Image 1 (cartoon, helix red, strand yellow):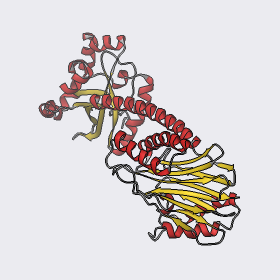
Image 2 (cartoon, helix red, strand yellow):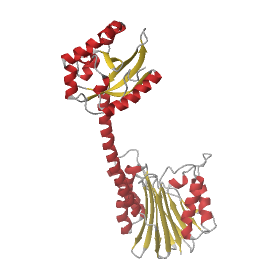
Image 3 (tube, helix red, strand yellow):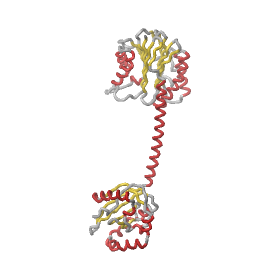
Image 4 (cartoon, helix red, strand yellow):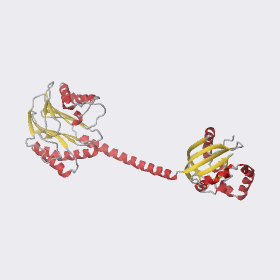
Length: 421
């Protein structure tokens, strides 16, 4: 059996019929010689005329080949190729393609001959040299006299290819935009991290701070802000939500908070001002934020604390149960009278005392059994790590929280520690 008795499948771009091929293909003497040589053979293939009417009703293109020559094409195939059926019948299939295309087609023909059928992506050469992308389904059939024929159907997929091209272009644009966004986020993350003071020695205090957003940037805010030589302000803020929106709001709150801290005004006034600012200028519903703030004298023997809906701050002496400093005001950003008339709490400090501020990204974590760490669990960690040197306490808490947590972090984490010298 001749291995060229059928049609292979190939999806390529390249030249179509050459001028010489087109001339020979449409030359009456050339076609007459070919058809005369094959007339006797065609007369014996009485099954093909019987199927022509059916094949002409199909939307797909149909080609039948025998011994490497085209026996029949329907009008659908002729329309795809831009050639008349009478010009294609009797033509050698190999002459339609470039040598490179034909080498590939030979492999596909062999696959079809072995399996009896084949289906793949293909391209029909057109008279003008262009290509029509198609899905080709081919099968080997045998007539009553044992002759092998290849029957191939072709479905035009030009629209799908055009859609794929447009989708590819759109994906390239999205990838470029995604890269721009990632670069912007990287810059925003560096800016946000620059707002967090990592360590500080001021007056009678040493301070350590940590911030880690669950995404590139987040809605937590930690401030360590000295006021000249008089006192040190520590503040932790947690904005609802995650990502870019929460980070923008947190940074806006940061810019509003700094002037209040530098003016050394009462902490309750600062909370009221922040609450009013957010309600008047940030029209997001539902939206809220929590704050824990303290002001410590330079000699570090007295501290004023004010919390608004925030998890309790802690004051711990090495090896002892931490003292909790509960918020006296409600969560900010939702109610105009959220700040309590007695919003502050005064705390006396001694040498060696340590103050702990944090966001709920530390306490609202769950173990493998679904148990939340919570404030009691954090109290245990703070008590344990209070026995460590101060510069190891921050990491000690973070390591214990990570060991408790099952899976990756789901919320932003902020932690600010201070030790009285």
